[in-house]
Structures are given as C-alpha cells and as structure tokens.
Image (cartoon, rainbow over all chains, first blue to last red; front, side, top):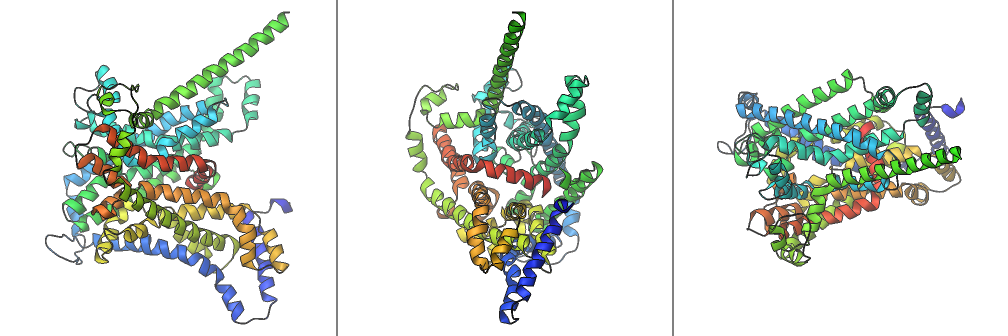
Length: 320
Length: 283
C-alpha cells in the first residue's frame, strides 16, 4: 500500500523533511530569507499575470460601466449600465453574436467530424503514420496571417480551390468570400481546418491509450467491427473529445485574425463575428466603453456555457 | 501445401492492407496540407507561371523572395525576432522559477498563487484588448516594441508554468532533498539536478512562446502603426494591401513568415505536443 500513496501526500512528507532540515539550523536572518524563497520564486510570474492580464481585465470591467466615447469625452466617467443598454439594444451586437455561435459550433463540428475518422486512420501503425502526424500539424503552427492570405488566393477567382468549387457549381465567377450567404460558412470551414490538427492529435493520443486487449477480448466474444467501435472506441474517446471541443470552441469563440484578414466582417456585416465587432467598435467607432462591455458580456456568457457543458456531460478534466 | 498457400495469402493480404492504409494516410494528409504546399511551391514560381493557374510548377525562381525583402521585410523580421526572443527568454525564466517554487516548496498561499496564475489563461486577449490599448496609449507605449513585448508576456506563461510544474512533480524530489541533506546548497541542486531534468520541457515552452509571439496579429495590429516598429504579420499584410504586388511576392512573404516557426516546431514537436495536450485536457 505504501507505493500507492497519492502524489500530494508523498510531496507533503518530502517537504516536511526539508523543513526539519531548515529548523535544525540556528534561526536568524538566514531563516527569514529561506521562508521568503518560494515567494521570490513565484513572485515574477504572479506579477506578470496580475499586471498584464488580471488588472487590465478589472480595468476593462470598469470601462464597461463608463460608456466612454472618444467623440464626446477625453476620459472615462462612470455611467452605470449605459454601455450595456446600448449594446444589448443594438441589432449589430446580436447579429455578430449569432454569427459567433454559428462559427464556433461549425468549427468544432468540423474538428470532431473530420478529426475522429482521421485520428482512427492515423492510429493504424504504418511506415508513414508518424511522419504524416507530424506533417498534419504544420497548418496548426503556421501563423493565422499566413494561412489567411494563402486561402484568400486559393478562393479568389481562378485560384485552385475556386476552380474546383466552380466546376462543381458551388460558386460562380466571384470568390465565395464576396458572397453574403457563403462568406461565413466558408470562413468557418477554414477555421475548422486550422484547428483540426490539434483535435486529431488529441484523439489519436487517447486512442493509443486504449488497451488493445479490450478489442481482442471483444473480438473473441464475437463483437463485430462496428460493435467494437460503438462499445469500446467511442465511450473511451468521449471525454477527450468533449474536453477538446470545449477548449477549441473557446478559442474559436474569441477569433479575430482569420475573419478580419479575409473579409473584415463583410460583405456588409454577413461575416462579422463578435471579435471583429469589438475591434470595429473600439478602433473605427471610437467607443471603448461599449467595446469593453461586449468583451465582458462575451466572457461571462462563455464561462457559463462552457461550465454548463462540462457539468452536463459529467466530464471531470482530471479523469481524461 | 494448402496450409502453406493459406499462410502466404494471409501475408499477402496483410501487406495489401498495409499498402492501402499507407496510401490512405498519405492522401488524406496531402489534401489537408494542400494550402501549405501551394504556398511553398508557389513562392518559387514565376508570376507568369502563377497567373496561368494550375498547381503544377513549370518554373523556378528566387526573385519573389528578393522582391518581398525589398518591401520592408528586413526591419519587420528584426522586430519580430527581437520581441519573440526577448519574450520567450523572459517567459521561460519566469516560468521555470515559478514552477520550481510551486512544485518544490509548501508555503502559505501556494494554492492561491497557482490558481491566480492559471486564471490568466482563462482570460482571452480579445477581452482585455480595449483596456490594454487604452493603458498603453496613456503610457506612450504604442508603436513601441517594449509595449508589445509587455503585452506578449502572459501569452504562454500559464501553460508554461503548468507544463514545467507537471514535469517537476513527475520527478520525485527525494534525490534533491538527499543531496541537500548532504550539504549541497539549493542553487547547486537546481543547476546540476533540476535544470537538466527540465531541459526538454524548457526548450519546448521556449519554442511555444516564440511561435505565439511570432505570429501574433491582433495586438500588433492594434498597437503598431509606424513602419519602423511593425512586426512580420503586419509586414505581410502591407505586402497585400499597400501596393498592387504580384502574387509571387506575397507567397514568398508568407514563406518567410511561416518557415522559421515551422522548422522550430519540427525540431521540438515531440515534447511540445505531449505537454500541450496534457495542458489542454487537464489544465
């Protein structure tokens, strides 16, 4: 039983030995210094997070209660919920909010829908499976700016992908990015394509973790291939797929780069997602108060939704 | 005779199955990589060849790179390299110290400090874009690489600390404590025992942070307007929007922006991917 003590307990015992060692020495300024050591070690990291993330977030919450606009005032003043009233009554906010959900859910569906079969294909050990998995990750590490411009030309008139889509009659002479109905779906597909490698590798790692004996035992008991997939593979990959969907869904929810570079939210506002609207509200309309209020609202909504998702699906992250 | 024939056909069937699998794996990955392949081969094609369309190259030239470099790319490359290197050095140092403190000491407030640092990961850049830009404008740190570097500091820090702390917890501290009981001081133990153990993780998070800074677009776009302070993503954007430059130049620009991080990733991917997966699913 001694070997199966939880990690935390073993650490606690270990550090106690360390404390005894410290106590055995004569107390003095050196002892004080030793007590301070862990605070000096963690201090810089804490300072960075507080100064550059948490404090700005708090300042953002304050700005959201000011409805500050560059045109009418040079500095922010408390104005209660004015900014929130303004954004919640604006059709642009709700339209972008709807687009963001379409984009987020679409991105995740593509990532899981293509990622699962792809992971199962790559999980078969062959001479090239390792190499292919490495190569697969390249779009994922490539900066968004680069893939965005690449796609811009692939989809432009005469571009290789455009020619294929045109041959199938899906698009006309113009780029699908210039079409109010096609722009957002096409952007969503590109977003799913960009996140797909990470989802695939996560599922692949989980699939490798499944004990092959389970499959052999099931085969001996007469389970067909489809039954083995449904009763072994799917349930054991379920948790990793849910957690990765939430993680990648959150990332997609706060997107900006791809849409801004490819369509700037257009044509019209047909592909304006919330990230693009926040940027426009701040830099083009000069309304930092409302832009901050949008940021805060999105954060709260997403926190609630992702918390609910993880609770409803009863996934404990520690168990994945 | 029949047994031998059966065995043979089984082996043949297996190698046939293997060939089908290899083909399927290669084909699917090639299709998914097509936009990248097109970018990399197009950068070496003449503009005449590119204008004719098609995906098979009929020419080879390095002129596109020359023309991209003529458009302010060297300055942007210097800026990106400077910011990414400084930030990844600072982040790996700060993260290593922090993770060591969290993993090897028990002290009052340890849980709170750990949670606060991880909470930084939960707040996305888009949510703090407005307040950060307002504050940096007040401090006259827009159009400044210093301002940009400050904004980039928390980008990879929580993940880095999480990865390093997990790595430290995975290695038992017993040997380190034995060494200290035998009179070795903590600095020597860290230098000769802890750091060598952490080396692969430190390199992976350094590469990860570098990659994040190298391709960052939103804050660079929001903070930098002067040509002298622009980073590579903005230089690439300028290639596209400021002039009517030929496609080949833009593709070459794309290669110049992506190649360093692609090579870096291929060099460290083994440690990086497993660490990030653990961070994403358990963090």
